[in-house]
Length: 170
Image 1 (cartoon, rainbow, N blue to C red):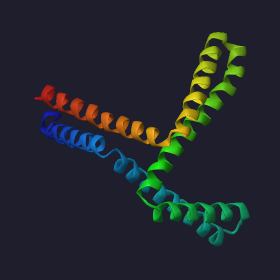
Image 2: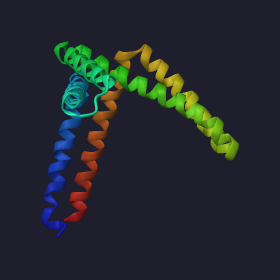
Image 3: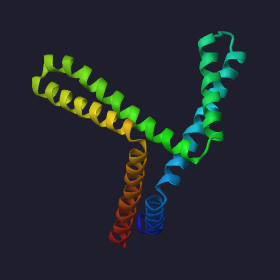
Image 4: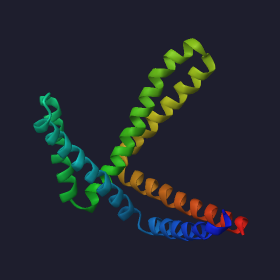
């Protein structure tokens, strides 16, 4: 049964390799494309909050406000240029790394009470996350480039893995 569909592995492998090499040769466009998808998601999310406000029996002004702001920011992001979406993605990832570092550091104090070694590890990964996230926020173009390269190399890795599996299945 597996051999019957093993051709899908070679197809996925080739497409992944092509995608990986394209991302590596066009890192800004790849990240801007990801930014476009996120902006479209935000737009749909914002519109759904507004629609829910007017169609639900229970109404929350905060939900309406959230929907309007989210849809507005998504529209701004979609109508801005290629560079804005690229920097948005880089900043969003940097912010996520920073917040993850802060939460790890805060959790480490509670974990240390239960397991000192695990708490210390969590504390140091939190500090590293705070440092890395802060550095990423101060260098958004470098962050954008590194994120794109990571995506490209991941596609290439997946492509090679699929091709190897194809030959193992034959």
